[in-house]
Image (cartoon, rainbow, N blue to C red; front, side, top):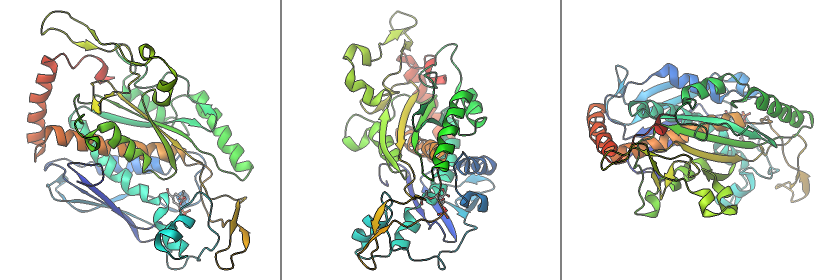
Length: 402
Ligand code: EPS
């Protein structure tokens, strides 16, 4: 168990300008084929979007496997993944003395009771998210065995927002399969799902760059084909919504998380918020439940309910500013402008890919927790038994495949 994970453990190591960033993922079943090209493709997406800084022109992130795999499959031992840093300059970089408001610079001084900002920022940097994306891409491959797909995309940059038609909201018979939404995401510059919204968001990024400012936004993650009944209502730390929220909140610069209609539920009446339960075919034992709406975002009482998951995270603008805010020089105690070093104008697109990875990690953990199995074969046969029982209860309507 690590953090809110119950069957997997996931740890990362490495500094932004150290030799490499490393992920250690333990608890995967034996026999999972690892598609390294798919992991690398996801790492490439993390480097993309509009508004990224100069660092992404230096790096060419690719995963190396250091342990846990034989002949292309997991063997049940810890999976160790590494992404090398081309910019390995940690020992030569200057010692900042003017903390950036919003970054970890000042809070780290209190944590370590020193003024070694460089050591703090090297680990606080979002470069660490390479490790999350690599591990999450492996978890997505595990989820594929259960027919579960996860997609992260940009919902908003500043005040430019995607239109209402989105995965997990517009679904059901005749809805758009997640694979098609993925193709739309991958065909846009900022990883939105709509060309007009993408253009509007790009303008916001360009405006921020012109003003030598930075800009944040909202990322959304949808998951389709989710096995019903994952998570638990029994203990606070078992609740899957809490586990997903913690995973999203842990992403650098995320300041808010929502599930389904989220904060919108607080301003509506109950009859407008809850999703009615219908049955496609009536009769004892013959019902297949249908939910005409998905305002709960696929989670009720901390458990998956067979609907697509819909989660959102709000990302603040990057805190390293070309036109810095007021700060204090720690070497003299005198007022000074905050320090500046190479950074991004906007990293919301990268955040969408990282959010997708974190949701895949938590869902893979929840799948293993509920279904179990030390090998892929054991997991699959247990899953068949579980899904047959869930179908007998009326689960398995059309929504989970959308
Ligand atoms: C990042 C690498 C970093 C930053 C950014 C994300 O590279 P460098 O510091 O060498 O320019 O571009 O880090 C931050 C946003 C941050 O606040 O530290 C990456 O690979 O994602």
